[in-house]
Amino acid sequence: MTAHWEAEADLVVVGSGVAGLTAALDAAELGLRVVVVTKDAADAGSTRYAQGGVAVVLGDVPGDSVEAHVADTLVAGAGLSDLTAVTEILTDGPAAVARLRARGATFDPGADGRLARTREGGHSAFRVVHAGGDATGAEVERALVAAATDRRLPLLAGHVAVDALRDERGTVSGLAVLDDAGRPGMLRAPAVLLASGGYGQLYASTTNPATATGDGLALALRAGATVADLEFVQFHPTVLYTGPAVGRRPLVTEAVRGEGAVLLDRAGRRFMTDLHPLADLAPRDVVAAAITRTLAATGADCVHLDATAIPDFARRFPTVHAACRAAGIDPVREPIPVTPAAHYACGGVVTDLHGRTSVPGLYAAGEVARTGLHGANRLASNSLLEGLVVGARAARAVAADRAAVRPAPGECLVASPAAPLAPRAVVQQAMTAAAGIGRDAAGLAAASDRIEEATAVGVPADRAGVEDAALTVLAQAVLAAAGTRTESRGCHVRTDFPDRDDQWQRASLVLTLDADGRPVVQAGTAVAA
Ligand code: SIN
View 1 (cartoon, rainbow, N blue to C red):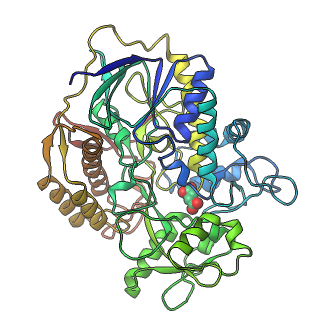
View 2: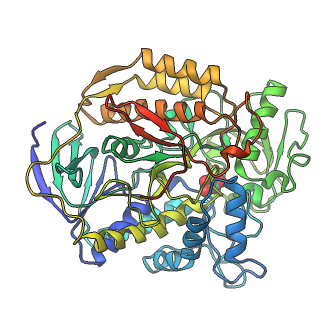
View 3: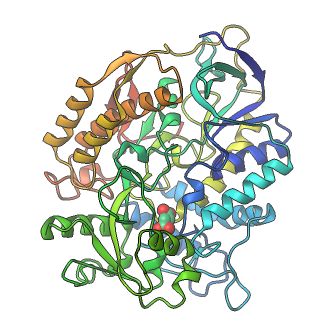
């Protein structure tokens, strides 16, 4: 493909959420020439929809400690988190939050002058700081976009990342993009950082915005990177249920349960109390699976979240309140109808704790990456923190690697532009039917066959085509990983293998692409690059 334009930078950041903008700002402060590429508006990604907050131990909550946060994260991660990753990332949390506040983000104050804290599923302490009540992600995104604007950071909006450019040794030498009209452009740079978010759009119902189509993950696979833990797609237990619908559904933050709301079945009975010592505040995978079982047992379309005892609900949870009111529900007076929906990719591109992937010059941070923090099930509100910490570390890694990682001069190679492409609706239907909470071998195989039958090889010509190609390869990768893991663990729930199996303890499934561009599972422990 002939580029309509070319530009040069030291670092190209793909994505303008918390990880991408943190990395871009830090890299610019380190003196690097940075360009941020985003396929939509700067604030259109998942960050701005995060509600609950940032889980961080700032040292001012009696009885809480980084060790307790580490322990909660490991329990939630169900035996698959990496202790070093968990410890390092959580330990770096306070400094990362301080930098974010210095960049202008404002968190809600408590009555005593300290920051207010809330609690979410799986946390043993009130340690989640929040902004605008339940609008934490919006405040984080606002502050970072403002800081980027103040710094005049070059932001290429409306451009989708297509492929990493590489030299003849495979070292990254830039990024090929398409603009909204499908015109190609080329950014030459010795470092590309993927901070492009997750792939909630694989499913019909998700908390994720339309941008969450896994483009960065697919790009990394095509560049030769390894990915891992893709079977662990986290379903948020509570999105507002307003009838069957496709696309982003309004989140009802776990902090609502943290402040005392309880889940009720169609008969008005609490069903979490007998299931877990933390009851309605059990880790998210436990609550989402319990809701799914309750729906199957009762034949209901939704369960209910009774938040009527929470004082001043509209002030504490303005986003949830507004979404409920828009749907004709008054959460102050009546329980909120809720169901689970696809929410977060616990796996991703395998990186070390500085964002380095297995491909020289290619970095990843945030939801697109798999650092080992989340394991089989991410602990609530650990993701904004991970984006802040690893985004900053990746900027330093890019600066440090500059002398060592240099693409050879000359031709930039792009993987073959042709890719397997299936219609999005087919992918979403197949994944929703077979790869949600409760999977089995027959269903996973049937979904893979259904997508395969609908797949044709084509050259993505625009943003929609790039997204469809990403969703197609990711669907097959998730199905392959989910079919291979013959146990239930964290947010991977197999109805034909309902128990945890210790032989899978600490064993991440690693995937790469074969010569035909098909994802292949390689058993073994994922190792950082
Ligand atoms: C929530 O507020 O419930 C979501 C927070 C998260 O996914 O970390």
